[in-house]
Image 1 (cartoon, rainbow, N blue to C red):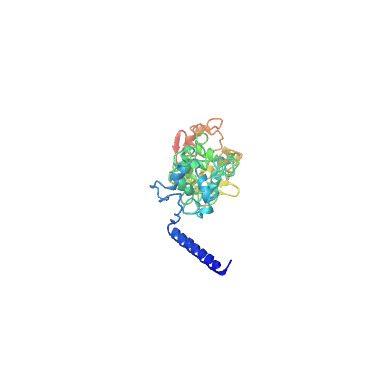
Image 2 (cartoon, rainbow, N blue to C red):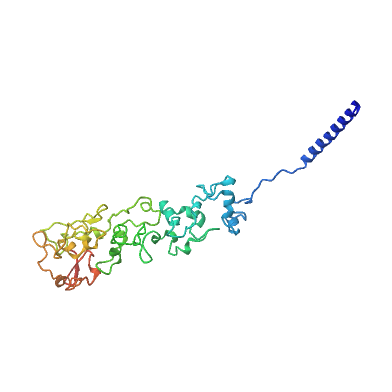
Length: 349
């Protein structure tokens, strides 16, 4: 190839290349920009929007599995780089694992709530403030059918017939467990004494989050600051006042170490009673008749010089409105009621 042909070929290639470059430049200006990908649409955080993300999930047959494709299996962010489980959104969403509604499973939601100091506000972020289900989540009220739903007392302790254990807060049902103990003996009434209420020993909260309820560690506080345990006897203003004896002023005390109750009117701290009595919360045998009225073995109340009771063990002769000849309580409403049933009359003593 001679030199002339080389120049011609060179210029021809240069012209073709220039045309190609110019064409590409023109084409590039016609290419539209890539739109921002938004699978949720606008206003995904607005409950009134059709694009509100719970509505999107509710309308999908895959439910929250769709979310996990981008936000990771644990909803921590994944390829979307946006976590669903932040403190401002759904901090407890990752607890929805297999077994969440199975009480025998480690993933049971009750265990999560217990370990979270019984704080159910996380649940409300999805299940609605009244636990009715909200936009997406199932209603908690299908299972928690009592008033208040999950915030009903019996969700954590008690049963369908009583707010008090059993069951206790750890799931125990035996009276030998400190969380169960003699709760029902005290509350049910109708057998040994006048009905008691929870307020006799506890500050009953107005709601789950009332200060002093779930914001402190177990065991529960035993205050006994209500009237029954603090009833005074041998008051000078009463007809049965004995000037030879002191005024009996109870100072109720619960010992959380040995589970004993002492210095209470209910268990012997009264005129002619066994003021040294210390019944054990988990042992009913320590609360027999003689433990309060006698010395633990003898049911006869104290006689002189420690007391003023006659030396007669036939209780029914004077207290027939309460007890029969076999020392069975026949009228519990008149027993441990702060009054002395004497020859059919109920008097202060």
